[in-house]
Amino acid sequence: MSTSFSPISVMKVINSWETVRQKNGFDEQLGIDTLLVLFKMDPGIKKVFGFPVDKEVKAQGMQRMGILIHGLRIVKMLDGIFSVMGPDEDIFAEILADMGEEHCQMGLSPEHFTLLCRAFLEVMENIMGNDWTSDIRTAWFDVIQVVNVEIAKNLQANMESAPLSSSGAVAISSR
Image 1 (cartoon, rainbow, N blue to C red):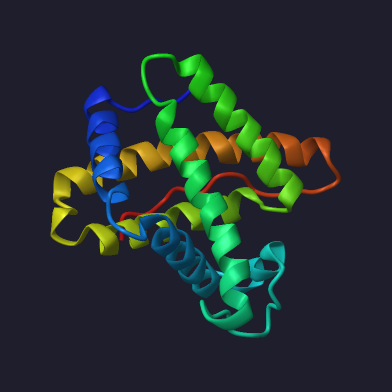
Image 2 (cartoon, rainbow, N blue to C red):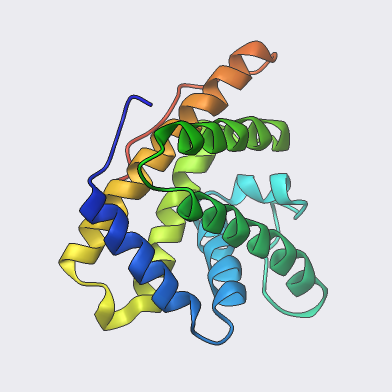
């Protein structure tokens, strides 16, 4: 893997992830809110998740079930990533390569995944509230940037072997 993060950042991310996961309804809130933020960032991405691009997606009624299903998949994906972070970079790289391939098959581009990472971080900041310190924020941005770059790189490689094109990974701004 070409990029890495510090063990201290990994510890901070995993500890804060495990802490917020203990909150009642965390998975649902994180998944739904991340998708709603993502849809505001890029309404065109709604079609990847089976929603009409020209209509607002709300987490209520029949749409709630659809957004909940996709949102929980995002949380499960992130949980999988965080569970393999550590000293064995080969396993971590393999997981990210598989995720890049899977997201390419879903029709996501590297830019879409970058937006997903930005949406996720925005929602995590809201969920963590006062626990989202500058140290925690920096650790999350460091780790998510590596995840983003690696998955986007794998997405790009899969897109190049398919009849699609894209410009590659985009840096996640810290606002």
